[in-house]
Amino acid sequence: MQKLVKTWLKRSKRIRGVLLQFSKELFFEFNERGCQRSAAALTYMTLFALVPLMTVTYTMFSAIPAFDGVGDQLNGLIFHHFLPETGEEVSQYLSDFSSQARRLSGVGVVMLLVTAYLMLRNIETTFNSIWGVKQARSGLSGYLLYWAILSVGPILVAAAFLLSTYLLSVQIMLEDLDGLGVMQLVYRVVPWALTSAAFTLLFVAVPNCRVPFKFGAIGGVITAFAFEVVKAVFGYIVANSSFKLIYGAFAVVPLFLLWVNLLWTIILGGAVFVRTLAEHSYASRISRLSDMIVVLICLALFREKAALGESVSDRDCVRLGIGLVHWQRMRSLMVEHRWIAVTESGDYVLSRDLRRANIWEVASMVRMPVSEELSSLRENIAGRAPWFADFLERQSELRSHAESAFSVSLESLFAAEHEEEKPLTDQT
Image 1 (cartoon, helix red, strand yellow):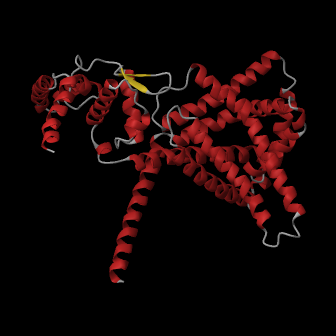
Image 2 (cartoon, helix red, strand yellow):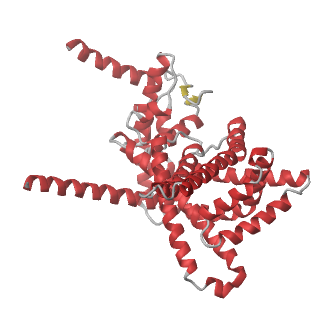
Image 3 (cartoon, rainbow, N blue to C red):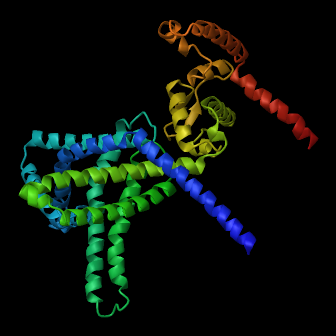
């Protein structure tokens, strides 16, 4: 029994340590990526893009006779679930704006679509920044994603609305027969489940990189839970505060801005959570090594796959034990320096002859500390630190020795590795 208690205490202590470390990384990444500033920028952008998005939604529904009148009902449902207290007034204002927008000329419609496009583009850029992706979607892939959001999105939301309406009608009909309140529980859970699904798709589909669906789903569920908690707290504070007493009818404006900012903060926090969770899950001893070693490990894999005439996927490199974010950062670097190329299927192939590329080129690409970067500081530091000039000379000697030692080709390096493995194979 005592041994069992000790084991449990040791395990709980380890879990607390992991959770504490995870929380520290989560808050660090949230601040490091400037998520609070991004939330403020997206709040500002939302003010301009919300009406165009609603206009597109109304237009989609008006084109389908079966959905006639669904737009207004759906509008009320969304604002009921996503806006506490101020939802009804804001919904009325936006409906009026959207009605006016539907009467615009062709130029006005184009401007609305451009505004909606810029909104979606800004969201993708923010998510890419969280995942460390420098290149946004371009061409056909970006167009298809945005078009899917603008066209298919309203239809999916309408389907969710119809499902909720159906469950509500079933609940009313079976109210006397449902003594356990199962249907009432289902009706309460469905909006939360749909919100979780929406967040999951947002986390998985928007970044221009592969996000594991498993982690996206976990992030979606937790973000939806956090959203419901914050919405309840925000609604309680608004209902029991003096906002309306001070601002009167104008209170809806600052409250709406504050809520939209909170909503984007929750969403970006969820995106950071998914990224941190994915990095933690894939992290191993390899991921704690330097960029230099990680690139060499990846290039060795690319060499093996090239010999078989195969491409390399993100999953192949992640399976090596490299952290997902670490791999994405090194992948962007290798693509930028043309070590690897992206295929039409989204995989990667080696684009350089390793017989003509040496280790020093890799060291220069990842900016290994054995370099002349400090020489630019000579004028600023030499006067205050007489030893700095001598240090630069020694660093220069180290660089020349390193460059000479790293002049061997990558093909020779990887080939030597296989030659050393052969005797071991023969012995077995």
